[in-house]
Amino acid sequence: MNKSARHDGMRIEIDGEDPCVDARLVAEAFALTPEAVMASLREGTITTLTERGAGEDAGRWRLSFFHGNCRLRLVVDEAGTILQHSRIDFGETPLPPSMRRPGDR
Image (cartoon, rainbow, N blue to C red):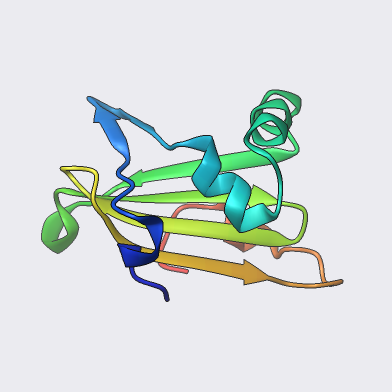
């Protein structure tokens, strides 16, 4: 996993229950423009999964973005600092359905 340092201090805005991720961050991960990210979210070709930490993970969020056969995952703290950043590209293999569900994957 890559650490947040490569994102030049980019933070995730957290307003109550709704984290807000800058489209530029998602665009970079999926080799798209920010405008294409926004259009893909509206069209449903990029989907998301938001998980709020509990227990030892309280105060953290796990934000997953799915596009084609790729997954972008961000783990952020309650201040919006990116703690972990990972991207998986399954190539020609479709993304397993289990990757789109909450849990420890």
